[in-house]
Length: 112
Image: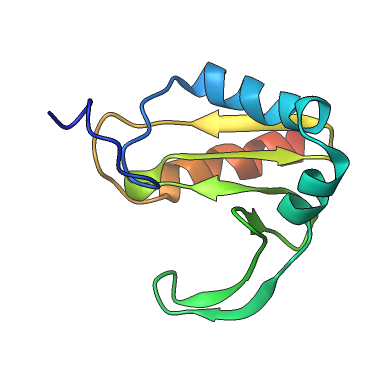
């Protein structure tokens, strides 16, 4: 039942490879006006759920370095970094925190 029920922002089922590929293709398949909406902050301020200041676009989280994407419950996330020219995705099979993915992204950025 869980996998067949559509619950936006909760139960996406995908591989990390597919998500990273999707994020890399979005600028090619979406109209420029929609890309502008996905990459321009519409709200910046304190997020009570994340317990920190964030910038939200219409559907994505925008980071100060220009990368944008979305984190998921349990530590999963996907984003694209146009400055460094890569897309990244990490998915988990169980709920956990984001320490693992944060470490992977930090290491990747150091290498690039």
